[in-house]
Length: 124
Image 1 (tube, one colour):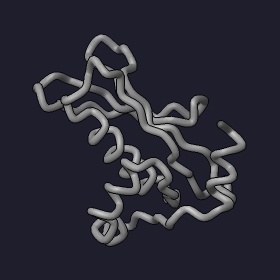
Image 2 (tube, rainbow, N blue to C red):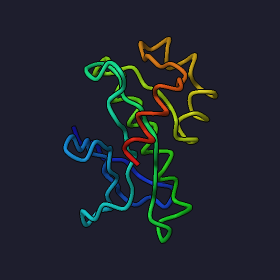
Image 3 (cartoon, rainbow, N blue to C red):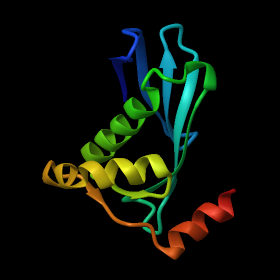
Image 4 (tube, one colour):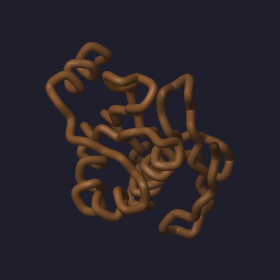
């Protein structure tokens, strides 16, 4: 999976699924990865992803890259039928704002539990 978007400056960026890195990565036009939304398999590893950390290189701040990254990670998770478990504050906020619409479009998510937080802590 790889999709191209325009950031706030009109520059082209690409979001890709990185299965090995357990992340969605955003790259600028020259292919340099400048941000990632990291996830871990949830308690049901086949059908759940715990999104626990999102980062964008400071020098690319203000271009809306984290919003593009979170939105595309949610969209791809919806298309794959995966339940999103938001731990990262960006994912929590996005689902608080748009969770009803996400669910109406077939997306699945649930609040993080203590067991989910334990999974994240063990990987840290």
